[in-house]
Amino acid sequence: MKLSFYKYQGTGNDFVIIDNRELFFPKANTDLIAGLCDRRYGVGADGLILLEKHAYSDFKMVYYNADGNESTMCGNGGRCLVAFAKFLGIIEDKTRFNAIDGMHHATIEHDVVSLQMIDVAEIKVKPNSVFLDTGSPHHVQLVQGLKDFSVQKEGAKLRYGIYGETGSNINFVEQLNDDTFSVRTYERGVEDETLSCGTGVTAVAIAMHKTGMTSSEKITVEAVGGTLEIEFKTDDVYSDVYLKGPAKQVFKGEFDY
Image 1 (tube, rainbow, N blue to C red):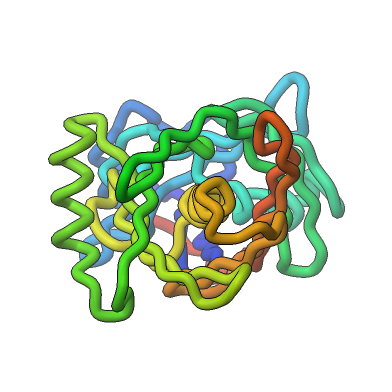
Image 2: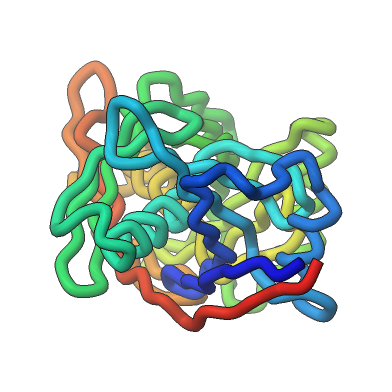
């Protein structure tokens, strides 16, 4: 059988996206999902996303990690899915859609998508790191010499050593100026460094503000794959959190399975 898919990327965070409004995709087939994401034997992606119908919003997002398991929210994936929904003609320049962590609003202008993330209230500030959930769990840690830092080795060590089987995404951060930071991220489920992580850069921005590394409510984060902007409002919680950056279609194809 042939499966039609689209490949999208947002600052180097890449996804296989499938129009599953007719609910034909075999969601229980983790081997198929992992196979599609495999970079040698499949299409190659950090994750797979299904676009489905939803009763109370424009569409529903269902996200799977590259290991084939359904996962928590993916910020760059959400931005790419908004671009895909516009490509399909489901939306025009704004949308409201459902994901595993609730409803999200987004706008799109050309290939730039601004996605509203969830409010963040609980932030655990530790002696050498910050832990928070921005739709997915994130460990944020300042380091020196980020360019030469061993993200794979140290990320895996923290992902399993501190957070156990469930795990956490691990972000290593270096400050560039008052409101700009550089980040490299080890993602659980991918079990490797990715070029960008939307919930990760959101976590970095909030963590840096929470710990006083910046006072700005508009922060630029430079991931390996590109630059993203994060805006928020602060009161008792971090609210009106928006993740903004490019999301582009790379190609369309068919996969035999």
